[in-house]
Amino acid sequence: LDSGNQDVPLPRYVRVNTLRTTVAKAVKEFQRTKIVRKGTETQTLWKYGGLIDDWRSMAPDTFYQDPHLPELLVFPPSTDFHLDAQYKSGSIVLQDKASCFPAFILAPPPGAHCIDGCAAPGNKTSHLCAKLRNQGHITAFDLDARRLETLKTMTTRAGCRVIEAVHGSFLDADPARFPQVTHILLDPSCSGSGIVARLDALVDTQLAENPDEATVAANDLDRLLKLAEFQQQCVLHAMKFASVQFISYSTCSIHAKENEQVVAAILAAQNDFELAPRDRVLPTWPHRGEVGHGLSADNANKVVRAAPDDGTNGFFVALFVRKVIDVNAPP
Ligand code: SAM
Image (cartoon, rainbow, N blue to C red; front, side, top):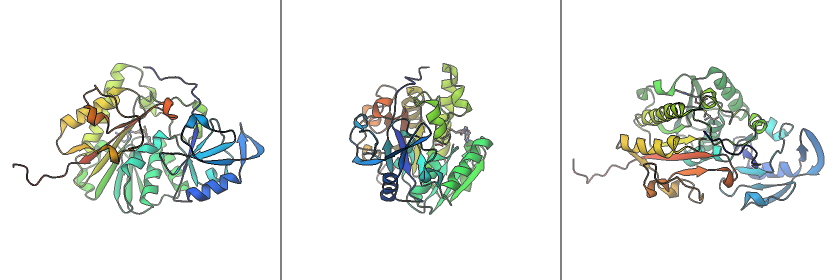
């Protein structure tokens, strides 16, 4: 499996944790902050460049606001945040751009009950919590106890108060026990073939983009097909929850087998959910799904892909929405 170019210098992204601060306050704080390069503090302060159109045109010593995700700030590649006060206090989260798409697209309103089915180490869980403004509830499942501990540490540092971490398989979660859940985020184990950022950068991101064991093991076609089967099962299980209206499905894979083909199989396997319209799914993001893997051009246009050319890791997101009941349809 091709994992792409390991040397692409992607920007460093900082998600402002709106549970602890605001974008305006975080920007002001950075403007008072000295730049750190390779663990050494310089005397230069960060300059703020406003909204950036093209991530390739970043000026030196300057950070920007992302044009697609308002809570995201864009810094030059290899910026070091280890000493940063806002990082230490949990006011910012180091999270790659595309990895912010699922919670942003799912967008549960404050008060909603949510499930994060494959949650650890929890960057998307904490992002979901920010969307909820700490009102509502999130049940965060993960099979891996160690990663779930990281989730607890990270989400506590981020000021999340409505997360219940559950050690166990999402596939064993009984839908009858979650009658209020309306939004489910699914980011299951995948081949990780979209990850191109350097490993030291991955470690910096609080393990968030660090491949789990299943990801590391995904080195042959058989393994890829097994992952696709698991990914499909996760989404079909989520569709059994009676009140669920929205399900986001994401991978950090570039393989259509884990992306468009999984979505096509799910659409074919049930009648209750369809893909949300493009205007609900990052409408200004130009990179959409690939046609020809079982998805029509219309459906491919409703899902999102990301690649290093977009300034972020390879990624895929689809949003399923429960179909509106047609009262005039024949019985
Ligand atoms: N969403 C996470 C984040 O943004 O920080 C990353 C999730 S990672 C891609 C996939 C996770 O799924 C791993 O932590 C793995 O342990 C977990 N996992 C695998 N099988 C699972 C299952 N049946 N139920 C719950 N979690 C599972």
